[in-house]
Length: 201
Image 1 (cartoon, one colour):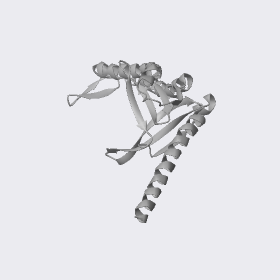
Image 2: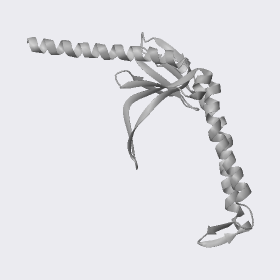
Image 3: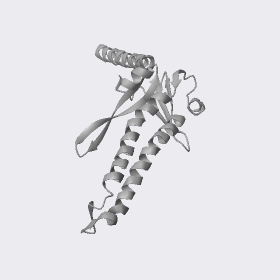
Image 4: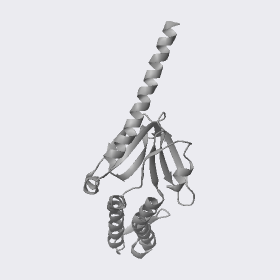
C-alpha cells in the first residue's frame, strides 16, 4: 500500500485497505476466455472447408482462397481468449483499494501508479453486488455512484467506479457507508443550522 500511503493527507487514517480476491477474479474471467476459444475452434473447424465461400474485394471466393481470412479470425479470437486470464492476473497485481475517513482510493496502473480519489462529498450512493462466484469465495463488489453519465447511441447511462471482488465485502461496504452517512448527516445538520441562523437574523 506504499503508493496509497504516500498520497494521504496529514492525519488521514485508513479504515480499510485490500486487493481483489485472486481466485474470484480469475474465475469470473474464465467464461469469457472459454467462449472466445470455443468460437475460435468452431470457426477453424467449420469455415475452412472447400464448400465455404467468402467475399473478397466484392468477388465471391471458395475453399482455400478464404483460408487466410479464416485463419486470421481464428488466431485473433484464440489469442484474446488466452490473454484474458493473463491480463486479469496482471490487473490483480497492480490494483489496490483503500477506504479512509475522507475518501475511497483506487490504485491501478502497470507502468506507473494511477490513483483515483473519490471524496465522500463526490459520492452520491454506495451499493454492493454479490454474485454466484462471490458467494463461493465470500467476496463482493462495491459500486460507487458519483453521478457520472456516459452518453451513447442507446441513450445515457450511469458509470460506476468499483471495488471489485474484495474479501468480506459487506464489512467494507458498512465501513464506507457509515462514513458517507455521517458526512451527509453533518452536511444536513450544518445546512439546517445555517437556515435557522439566517431566519433569526
